[in-house]
Length: 337
Image (cartoon, rainbow, N blue to C red):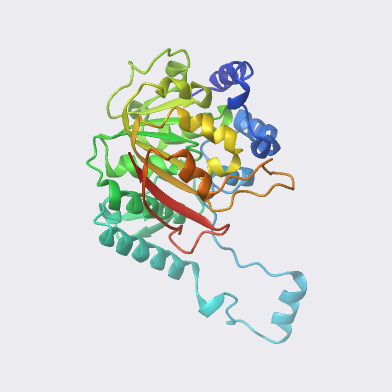
């Protein structure tokens, strides 16, 4: 996907209805992300050189033990060479090993496809890549697998589903799902810069032959041209195309919490009655209302429940990554029509 297409997306975005423009939360990052997207080196964009991309999931960092100058001098003075600085003397390799085994156990408990069957992409030169047996992983990759396990426990994926994700961000969730279920059809909706970056990543991670680009979808007037088994990328203002489109799963992780309730209600108006299942991972009490990145009005778990009153809430639980409970009081929940 060329930067020319990013310009086309931005041109259309400027004329999109207000309810599809960046919310107050994302307005704080919009210019920086656009600047990065316009000049990014995709061969190296997961190396840690673009820390602001972590705001929507491109976070592949690894722990580096760093000391200030005075600490280095003290260590040298007292000849302390083997003193561990991490809790319980853990090293990065220990954390990787625990994350893998935790993910594997979660998968077994949820009767999910095993994590040992898939491997994370090295596209973009991720700094946190590590190997287990013949496969390679990152902590974020394993964390997205853990989310899939919770969803699968209730939805029992067959592999031929149509899944719609709003706010695909990095695309790591798409990567995990498509590697587990190659025949799954996925539609990814997001803001211009985000969908541009996600499309480029998935193109590198899964292969260009497995995606349908925004260059093709941008002028669609309906969803009749969807290609079975492929990942489709669409800008967020094309969500109204879902109004009369029946599909299996709607997925949103974190981004609803970065919107005001009225904006979320608008997006859900295209989902309700069309999706058989809904997976949400959100902050229980919503984002902050002050600071650089903030929302004007918080949205809570109760709001989601009220907005989805035609659905049955099957289960909610505290959300975990592959190494810890998520900070920010996040929950994940599954609803069924």
